[in-house]
Length: 367
Ligand SMILES: *[C@@H]1O[C@H](CO)[C@@H](O)[C@H](O)[C@H]1NC(C)=O
Ligand SMILES: *[C@@H]1O[C@H](CO)[C@@H](O)[C@H](O)[C@H]1NC(C)=O
Ligand SMILES: *[C@@H]1O[C@H](CO)[C@@H](O)[C@H](O)[C@H]1NC(C)=O
Ligand SMILES: *[C@@H]1O[C@H](CO)[C@@H](O)[C@H](O)[C@H]1NC(C)=O
Image 1 (tube, rainbow, N blue to C red):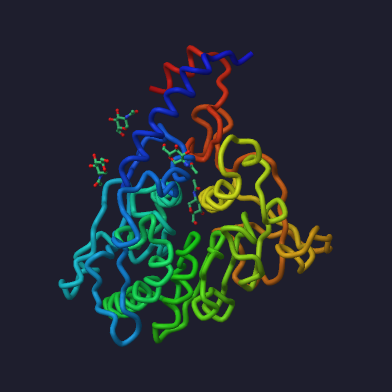
Image 2: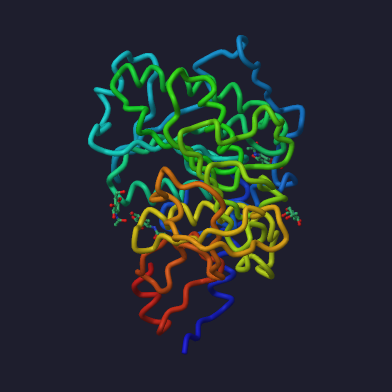
């Protein structure tokens, strides 16, 4: 039976939580902390900034690109991390970009950044798979607490500048017709907005619980934004968009509250919203990817998604491009949380310390 010193584990986690909460840019490379950290970044009382520090970017014709506070970082494997230098005309050819690999553009949400949770879990899952060029859009400096309203406003300027960049990279050889834009929360709407500024058709958008609060109708992601718009709902109606917004909408555990977030000792809404990223990270591994079944179109809005007969599809990276409609998946375990030390997954997606068969062997292998 697993018997570990609870205080040892929890106190360690709690103390690292507080250390993390004080700095806004956090990278936890070895899964020593968990995504719960993200919840503290939303705690405005921990931020030194006030509303007066918020920056508002001018929109449309007045947008100035490149934006000095937006960075694009290319990862092609475990060692290459390259920040795009927009002033270099043939940057792509000089980079480690691999034309054989699939391109993904990953966009974080409010209070995020390249090296922040939860998006770092997804980035690292793509990196460790090895078959992708991962483009991280880092708009951290203009999306920090307490400036949510400003962050929503800034999405358009970011989308415009990113569209300019993609147009440029396309001329340099990037095959935008195969590009997937993956956004979490506000990042989902940025993916949608990019498509409105580019002169080519966006191939695919995967929206991880697209943000709901204060999103103007004109900026909201919809199925017109790409050839395939695939949406994963985990906190519909609260932090997440309440209605269907893609060609295919996945409702996880009903789409509103995730069971593993209930009574987890912190904001279950935010927990549900944030864990959408772990489902996506999990989906990169075909053995772990969850399958969802067709269900009532009332999902995620309706009271109880009814059943529909049909063929299940894989949720996330391998969702077929032609899939349409509502799909439901039920599972009460936190996604991508390894079942035991060394098992596939990412410890940062766990809500509780992983059980080890014997305390001693677990600790020795761990650190
Ligand atoms: C994290 O990983 C690096 C190398 O990947 C290692 O040198 C370091 O000791 C690890 N830190 C912890 C706390 O495990
Ligand atoms: C925010 O952080 C402060 C200081 O650590 C804490 O007292 C407060 O309870 C937190 N609020 C929320 C909503 O987590
Ligand atoms: C935030 O304020 C604390 C003191 O209240 C200070 O020590 C810290 O350096 C400040 N952090 C930033 C990022 O300005
Ligand atoms: C990595 O991604 C490729 C292509 O998407 C997939 O076929 C492969 O199974 C993945 N490998 C692992 C270990 O997840």
